[in-house]
Image (cartoon, rainbow, N blue to C red; front, side, top):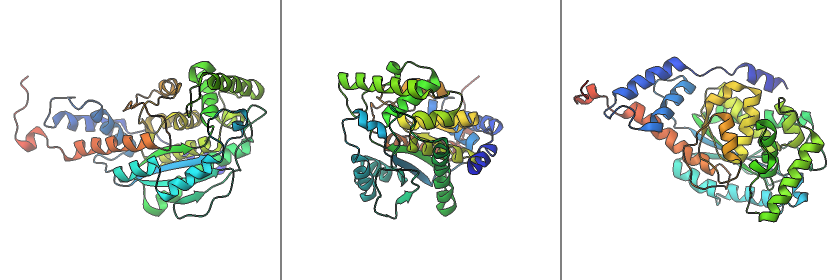
Length: 353
């Protein structure tokens, strides 16, 4: 608990004065004022987050955190639980979508085993922070103990801190891997936002209508049995969450502590962001929503966080794939700010009036 407490104490507000100065420069660049739209907004926010007038985002890291879920016993996913470990091995071989996109954008992928249901072969790109061998079935009782929930969040803090110390980080993306994890994510979103379970429960890996109805029944049962307190994020995480969701929250908190922008991926990452922002409301300003997932309920979660996604590509894979694309836009936005000429520098006449 000490690591979490210390991290929360050290999170500060973003620098709004520097954001105003960044806006002045953006207004003086060789273009009509505001004509680069949300790219300008993004650059301004990154200045405020990093507290640097001319930020650079060269050291790009995507944390893909993996865990299993006992609720798969309830047939809430089309895929069997062993696929989680198999996909982690695919990540480590470099053959997954996240690997391809990360290579394309020049980002390093760090894969974290925080709760895969079996032991994985050690690998140079694998960080093992195992809290347990998958959570318990939330339809029968709590996913984990409160102590395990804290341990999961602190594991996420630790993986960020370790990479920061090792190679430095300018921006992170967060992603997930865990068969069945849209079910605890829907439970978290329903609990924290106060939304109906039906409104935040989607098809996950492609469930049919009956599969979705079963999933809704399971989530309602989990919320009824466990009675998570929406004002206590660690209680929500412990009662109906997942180890990787806690780890994602921890990454967000650690990044905010060190003034590093966080590009969140889809539905599961956003559930992690709900936990993080309940632990520290200041973290909201450090978040950049990469895209709007096709997963039902993601928009509700984003609205609760006050986030407008950068992209809408009908994606719902996870892994950090959407975050990789968001990182590109973030990097380009600061290049606009730092590399584009002003009217004075280019000796171009300004608009009249």
